[in-house]
Every structure is written in C-alpha cells, then in structure tokens.
Length: 225
Image (cartoon, rainbow, N blue to C red; front, side, top):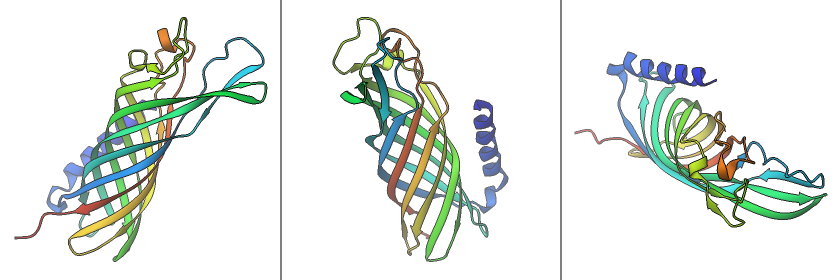
C-alpha cells in the first residue's frame, strides 16, 4: 500500500510538471474540526470480563495550501501544509458496563497532495483524493505496558514518527470576484501502524488513525496588475 501512495505522489508531481504554462497559483487557508478514532483497541489484560473499545474524539486542524488550476479543465492540483490534532478515546468495559474512558491526543504536522475535480460556475461542487504525510509531533494518552502510570502520559517515544494516509472528500465552493469561500468534508485513512509496541505501548501493539474532517476556508489569488 505504501508503494501505491508513493506512486500517487509521483503522478501528482509529473502532472504539475506537464502543465507549467497553463497553471496559475491560487492560495488557500482553512481551519476545521475533526472526529478521530484508532482502528484497534489495546490487548486485553487477561481477565475475560474486561474488554476495551475505541471511540471517536473531537480535535481540530488548520493549514495553508497552493492550488494549481488547469485552464479549460475541471481539474486542479492542491499541495498543502497544516497542523492536525486528532486521536481517539479508549473505553474499558467490565462485562457490558463501561468503567473508564481515556482520551488520546495525536498531533501531526501534515503535508498533503490532492487532485481536485469541480463543476459549476457560481457555486461549484467538487471532489478530491490524494495522500497525506504526517510527522508526529506529540502523542499523549493512557499507557498500556508494564508499570504503566495511571494518568495521561507522553507516548511519543513509543509512537512511530511518520504517518501515511489516503484522503478523499467532497466540498462546496462559492465563486466570488476576488475570493472564494469553501466548505469541505474529507476522510483520512491511516495506513501505518503507529505503535512501536515498546515500553508504555507494549500492550497496545497495533493502532492506525482514522479521521473525518469538516473544514471551512478561503481560496484567493494575486491581483492582476
């Protein structure tokens, strides 16, 4: 799967190089809220009555980007940079009763590459798909391992540094004279197991990130002289 992501990055780069004369840079700024969840729960501690489940947690994000529209075409290339705080919750159950819930906070510096296709003159509906590379800056939550503290703790030393995700979404853009507001809903599907399965995450050997993001922003372009 990682080879497919690298191939997609190469395709986006070649597409950018293939249309240098037809591309005019537009700029984007955005912010939004997300719902994050880990794909798997910690390993049960060996008591049959005790189990764990992951749940959705609210986070936030913000970023900037460059959009390269193809003239006389509905397609655009988007390259972005942003910060995303997402994560998950992990709930412990005794039989069918929830006993406790722990929040997990994962903070990434993200670089995205997306292909966008849109239709409409005044109000444009669009779809997008691409990749997201995330550099893990922080990870805090409940530790699962030998002699693990009971409170929230720093899990970054036992978390992998790089996350690779696939992204797909839809949006609505309102085309004005000098600036275009937009709203967007996207889904990010993490491909990398972020746990090193060491020390504080020894008993949490596998989890991948999932995220829904609702964002709003502005697209604008340099004024013609």
